[in-house]
Amino acid sequence: MLRIANTENGQVRGLPAADPRITSFKGIPFAAPPVGENRWRAPQPAESWQGVRECFEFAPISVQDTPGLGDDIYCREWHVDPEITMSEDCLYLNVWTNAKSADERKPVLVWFFGGAFQWGYTAEMEFDGERLARRDIVVVTVNYRLGAFGFLCHPQLTKEQPDAPCNFGCLDQQAGLRWVRRNIANFGGDPDNITIAGQSAGGGSVMAQMACMDNEGDFKSAVVMSGMFGSPYEVNDFFKPQSLEQAGEKGERLFEYLGVKTLEEARKLDANYIRSKYSGLRNSGEMFFTIVLDGRFCTQDPMAAFRNGSRIRVPVMGGNTGDEFMEYIHAADDNGLAKKAGEYFGSKAEQFLALPEAKDRTDLGYALVSSPELGVKAAFLGENRQDKPENCYYYRFISDIPGDDNAGTFHSVDLWFFFETLAKCTRPFEGRHYDLARQMCDYWANFIKTGDPNGFDLNGNRLPEWRPYSDNDRSEMLFTSDGAQASAEQNSLVRFLLDELK
Image (cartoon, rainbow, N blue to C red; front, side):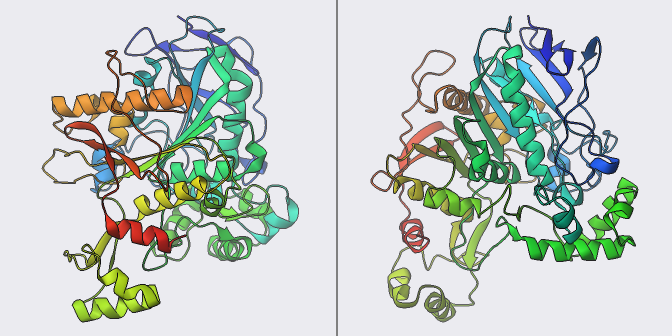
């Protein structure tokens, strides 16, 4: 097995994974520590070392709120360790490979974790790359800076370093991807067959990387899980990039709150002090740092770039879970619904009200619909309108999820299945869940290899056909308790709203 590999900075030694046919390399530096003068700068080259570096454990996670201290579903699900090591020195990546030599040229997955650009880390237990590596995929998970460390914007930064004034977390991802391009052949990977993938903010990161034309040629396909959003009723700007001016004003307020006036002073502050102050402001709704329209890395809304064809156009797999980010119309009764319909849809209000799903009322409100489903499908239809459109494959995860909390198909639960890591979860999954996870991981592996999820499962059985989603063929793949089931779009409300989102 390939236990020692060369990198541009020196040799690294990995360990056998739970399956000894897999080698895991954890904590490989891909950039210099972003501390001191490197705080709030684009990632700088990593220093070289002598001898063989032991890459046996995950590196420290990015500075963020301490995991595992709350009682929310994510602290119960996988943010379970309040003692996990955290540091500003966090620019490391991890590799899983089943290669026996460095010349095997296996397809590569580069994974970006989610967490609203404020939380998350590669050491999360669901991101174990072993099961994909058993399918002849070289898996790379890339860490990046978060919150005020990864996405601060300030007029002084814009003036002093105009080529990289903000979006440092995205630049970390980009640096990790480029490290993979330069080095992954030494781990048995093919630098010319890379898929970038992520979920939630990680999916938003994939969208941002696709919208950055500097990345042209660095990947062949992309996976966006729960990372595209369409707002059919009230405007939701959460995943839309902020303007440089808006974000800069927040940065100025943060400096005031930190008690500093200059960038030089701010770079000398203790990281935990910045973390604490920013966390308080963020949690009170005062500020939230995320991707910024800086005119350098990010030149337009990534969602708009997808829909108008100005992204890096490669095949995409994307979808959502059944219960996440549902949107609805707030109205007390049918009269209130009719009034809202007039506000939202104007002359098409009567057409909307005639839809069988429009007057469906839940405890939340009327006309319940999935924002991620609308976002993914609107993006895919935009691609379908381009000349020689790339294939885009839509899924919806609607399996039953066991547990006393009756959590349903909550945001992120599908990660256990795509990575086929259910055995690490405390939920009482049964055989049908493991069967579904195997199918989902098989589809994912096929897509990483070829840009097409179709093919065979691990047992040599042909998987149910998954057709691309297009205007003429609204095909869906439903991941259900009974396995993968191909379907066609049935919801007339979804179709109406997609026409409105054009």
